[in-house]
Image (cartoon, rainbow, N blue to C red; front, side, top):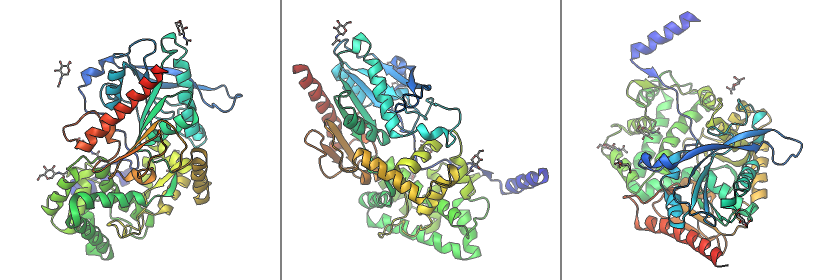
Length: 483
Ligand SMILES: *[C@@H]1O[C@H](CO)[C@@H](O)[C@H](O)[C@H]1NC(C)=O
Ligand SMILES: *[C@@H]1O[C@H](CO)[C@@H](O)[C@H](O)[C@H]1NC(C)=O
Ligand SMILES: *[C@@H]1O[C@H](CO)[C@@H](O)[C@H](O)[C@H]1NC(C)=O
Ligand SMILES: *[C@@H]1O[C@H](CO)[C@@H](O)[C@H](O)[C@H]1NC(C)=O
Ligand SMILES: *[C@@H]1O[C@H](CO)[C@@H](O)[C@H](O)[C@H]1NC(C)=O
């Protein structure tokens, strides 16, 4: 054993490369708004005691749910409460010190709160994320947490007459929309930003929008460079020299096992996740810059080197680091008690959202190893053999049955999407949800853009959207006051 390790380290030092642990993919913390963090001096943190199982009166177990609050604008009794719902990430004080909800609180003398979702961040009902312990992790319990939270807050006399407005982005957009649907007596209205409200196991549409985003921003020329780079990469898999060149271009330490479809699925994912990452975070102009860099040989010279260099750069791999493309490493990165494992569990037991290679002529079509088997095998190996294809489809059906899929019956919910956000494919983006729940889809905008405060890079439409959300919230509050 010892000899084995010594050998390994000699080998890798002779290459001058250091092996790095891959980041987990498929979920990302919501980046906090750019703000002067000295403003967060008004943000405080606390915990509330929460029932573990809201639906079983015989279960009296509890856990501590974290939340943050900021009362700098609060106008006293009768003034509203603004709650940002936390999703599958750690809550961050910057969201109560900047951003569009912060502006809403300023304009309406609101009290600001940010709640953390059970099983994420510091809100951990159990020490370990075993499959058994994870069974209280689902939307129904998370919404009941919010209901319990609001009810507790409103027992304080200064809040007994306060209206509640909720704001959520991404998965938390589903939360605030579905909270308004299920607990309409507890919330006046919600702003749902980029909510993928349809649970769907096979989700090729995600990469279709990533393709479309590069096409819209960078044009045919950019698409053909990416297409050729990915096709050349795959062509290189057929010969020994080709494989060596491929591994050099991508900075891979140990040769890939080209006979293992799961390892190739992981490799495919590394490529698609790099492109989707840049699209999900895109601001106006950022994809054009990437396309210019493809044309200008910034990432590499040959078509394959361009892709390899781009992937390495997006994944923050420095020159002296390399990675191993082994499916077990992918599983390991999800086999810890952290946000990633909890989120993977939710994809297996509620939403799917499995971003598979499309079959519709996109640049990603040829990465066929990124398929359902790749993702569902992870469900089985990480959690339980029973989490097979039939199980995950039934799980998504249950969510759509409970919350209504693309036809949610909900009032007073502003439904916002970015046209180049890959997640909008699972939201309602081309029609209003109801008379009081209007939809806004903003071109050239990506994921959750409206949650930020005003930015110098904002397009006119984006500035309009941020103002429009604030106007609607103010009108809900003033109508309520007049009654
Ligand atoms: C941040 O805010 C503080 C207090 O308002 C101010 O003194 C400081 O100059 C600000 N820093 C920046 C970088 O704007
Ligand atoms: C709210 O609390 C105040 C102060 O304790 C009390 O005077 C008032 O009657 C309460 N209002 C409602 C609606 O319960
Ligand atoms: C594009 O290339 C420029 C140098 O020409 C570099 O500064 C910039 O970081 C690159 N941008 C991206 C997104 O790769
Ligand atoms: C890479 O590093 C930069 C600078 O530290 C950071 O802004 C960016 O989010 C990182 N990207 C990823 C994919 O982690
Ligand atoms: C995850 O970790 C547990 C406990 O260490 C281990 O039993 C299990 O085999 C691991 N699963 C995978 C897929 O690595």
